[in-house]
Image (cartoon, rainbow, N blue to C red; front, side, top):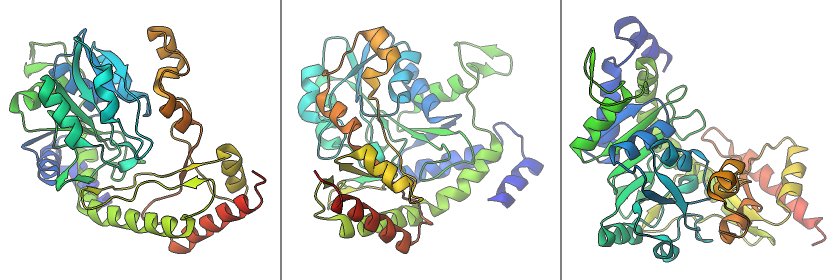
Amino acid sequence: MVGAVSNALRNERMVLGESVFRFEDAFARYIGTKHAVSVSSGTAALALSLIALDVTDREVLTTPLSFIATANAVVQAGGIPTFSDVSELDYNMDPNQVKGHLTKKTKALLPVHLFGHPADMGELMAIVESRGLKMIEDAAQAHGAVYKGKKVGSFGDVGCFSFYSTKNMTVGGDGGMVTTDDESIAKSVAKLRDCGRTSRYVHDVVGFTARLNTANAAFGLVQLRHLDEWNERRRAIAAIYSKHLNGVAYVVLPPRGDENVTPVFHLFVIKCKKRDELAKYLGERGIECGIHYPVPIHLQPVYREMYCYDSGAFPISESLSSSLLSLPIFPALPDDDVKFICEQILDFYRGCSG
């Protein structure tokens, strides 16, 4: 990767150099779409896509159990974020609840493939197609995840990816990608990322400075070549966790996938009793865990203030926010370390008095 970045810095334009377009072409082929447009972040991918789809003053239905950027992008695009609760089975948008939250103002669905597990795209696509809605997939955590033979990010009008440094693949900093089969959307996003220009000094829309740097694209090209092997390693680690934690009282394991769904385990997230106490216990033993996400989007102070949400609006998301714990998972994590983590979790619950 260092060599690829060095070569790009020495021989290409620093902005929109050759590596940017090579990365876009390679990523489109990987996801299975006709077009891919790189941008400066996953949030920019969402916001520019929503602008291209013209959600101004229209509702975009998404999930409250996600990073706040999912909903922020709707606001930044001039839309109105609304929410539908998640399924307790996979923590993704529950198709059975979606219809109850659709209104005459709804323009699009914005499901999140949370933690690298594909949402139920069959049911969700059926809803958007029957209602004439747009579909934007937030695939920021799901590079390479597969639903019924197709990679996520290739189902809807638009797929949006993040290459932030914690993702399954990165660009050595912030970065994002928009995938689509619609040429007009691709052209619109490409224009919006580059100050709205039609030529060097002519601009026909109010655009943004949201380009991916050439060196970052060169970094991403190398990472993309290793993505499948890294995802396979993540699935292997998930299998070890599942083997050793299966049947543990007070612990619910994440779904492993089946013949229809191949997750990529951006995170390995357990639902557990005494979550905060367990996290502290593991931390004292040198095991750093994460909590995704302790405050659901609708209960963030800014969303309470802007949209008057209150506790109880989306009970499943709220319950999960207080009980989900992300265990360490990354391709270089040794098997013995995974087993050690499992042993510590078992020890904690052996001493748990209920």
